[in-house]
Image (tube, rainbow, N blue to C red; front, side, top):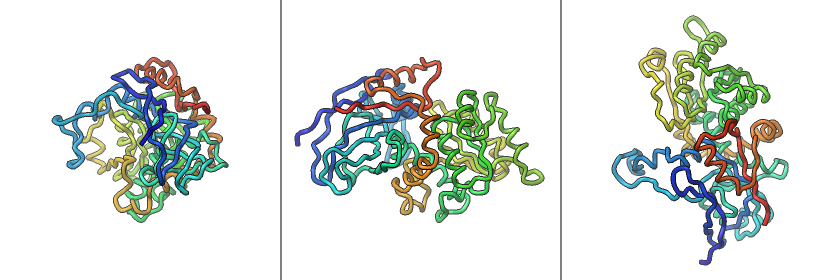
Length: 369
């Protein structure tokens, strides 16, 4: 089958993101061609790939044992077509699921076009009443945050719980005011939390949270936990957050999360700890307060919930939030919009920590052509 040449962002080696020529197949039966309009940049996962700090570069992942092993093949450069926040227009279609002219959100990497097969990859329609740029949150980034709430719900009320069950009427601490933390905090507010507080060390990011109407605490010195426990008192010897949505890939944030919980509370962890977690002490509050840490990794929803919560259902909850708070998200979270061609430079600067004020959310713009 003949293919089409597209431009994509690849990584030739550590610290070497580049624009490269890539190839996509022509759309066949049941497929459609998507011309990319917007692509969001993940400052966590993607920067780990550019730096080479993703564990798949260091160790072999055994999919059968679901474990990393020092022996066996590892991920290697070049890496092609990474990224997971794309929005595009369907320009050709051979499937009724993707009508020509419709706009869709998908996760297919920073590339100018894509041959989409809705039978193999999740396709989320972007409705006309939504700012199309905000569609970058529909396919994966928003579902990451919704999945955090879903794990909190399952932990608190079991696999038949609604997405709100883990936060409704409860005291929720969010650690980290990056994109995931801010969206998670907004979701907790929307789904009925009694109170939501965001702990963040950066004054600039706390200001963003406050502009979104969220209460904040300065955690630059790791002392926010004390204020949390003074703020939320449930009874003698029972103080702290009911649940913490941990949204930073730093061990200090997880340490704050554990210290902030009331006895038998739970940390729902959305962080990715590239450098390990040496600051976490499992013999302290974790042990003495009977705490729990649950990983809410986007690759799976809680056990027993998969049938009711496919990725499109997580996207629907995201869309509900964006319809309600989209103008605020656009104004305060999306800090940089730049041409697709500048993507490699941005990623290299992020990986090299060369930016005095890194973007909160950068979005690449694809000019029609």
